[in-house]
Image (tube, rainbow, N blue to C red; front, side, top):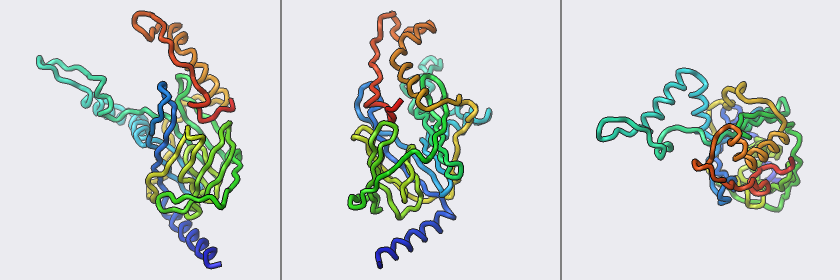
Length: 279
């Protein structure tokens, strides 16, 4: 009884705090979505309140915010060119592609926005050589909570839950201490914030920092630049695009190898690279 009362008090205090601040989480996301097939880790951010959330990459959001106005776009270009320029001994100026990482640059295109009032999540991404967006109902994920399986993540006692979602089995760990029924990527719908998730050790999401912020939940920029589509078709078209990239580029007069020899690009391995395999 005392433990139940304590949990209720903690949850109430957290709800009051969230009325004044939003929750912010930094995640490490490890995938095998690369040509080599080797795992690599990217940084993603999640900002949420009780009504909405956004999952995004901070650098990408910054670059998109700059590119959303003519003044910002010009300033970003100035920063980039200054970082990439090389002054030769004779005074001529060149630009070194090896220095690209020294200036703000967008490498991760994914945004996932959730709105509980609308019962929808919106995905914005770059697939098959184009910017795409689509919506899904928030009601699609059905969890089974494993109450006797727990894990401590960043000092929060988390409970495990499991689901089959869009072709993959996911295990997730959520904290009832943080009363946000949401989480990274598309994962949501548990009675607490999801701080960790894993699908067959191919897709691993780990919270590295949890805190509160007065920052508003941001939104994706320039949404009208994204074509609207349907999830399964977008993913299927992306796989076809990757598997036929050489011929698609050849039809546009572009050679991957300068001498015209076949590039023999690796085929897209859906089971290892795609977050969703049910298309």
